[in-house]
Image 1 (spheres, rainbow, N blue to C red):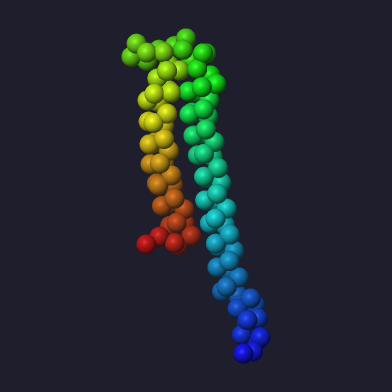
Image 2: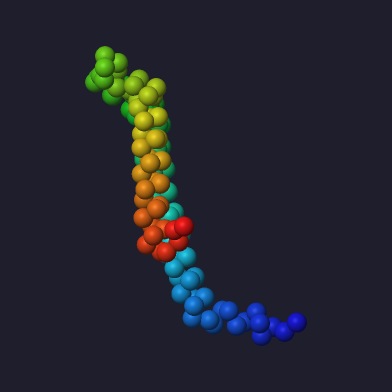
Length: 100
C-alpha cells in the first residue's frame, strides 16, 4: 500500500472547500446551540429558582409569576426553543446545501 493515496485528498481543492464548508456549518450550529442552551438555563434555573422571589411580585392568571415559570412557563419556553431550533437549522442546512 502506498502513502501517495493518503496524501492526495489533503491537497484536493474540493476536499478543502468541503472542509471549510463543514467547519462553517458546525460553527453556526454550535453557536446556535450555545445561545439556546443559555436561554434554557436562564428560564429554568433563573426564573424558576434564582429570581423567583422577585418574580412573585407579579402574577399571571392569579398565580405568582415565579411559581408560574417554575411549573409551566419553562415548559412553554422549551417548546418554543425546540421549534426555533428546528426552523433555524433547516435554514442553516439550506445555506450550506446540506438539506435533504
